Amino acid sequence: MRMLTPREWRDRSVDVLTLIEDSLDNHGYPPTLTELATKLGFAKATIYATLQHMQREGMVEWERNGRRTLSTTEKGDELYEASQGLRKTEEAYESTRSR
Image (cartoon, rainbow, N blue to C red; front, top):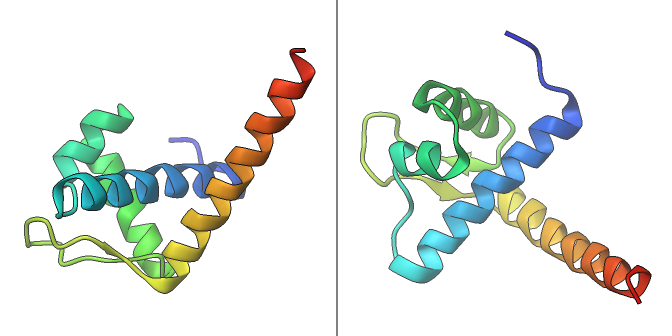
């Protein structure tokens, strides 16, 4: 199995954080591991490993044996917010290039 670069870890973490935030906003509860795996197109084991990494890095809190116990931490929220600002900046840049 290939090791992810720091940028790939960050991008994957942002994708997971985005899905957590979307689920909380739209449904009032976090996604399950199965829902994350399905939406991101990864195996459940890959999502599990990603969440373990994110928990070690202080981005999420989660009870491994509980359902819908996933939550973001302050650090995770900060990364999510920063990524949303970056995405908006990239979209604005791309729209000016296509004119």
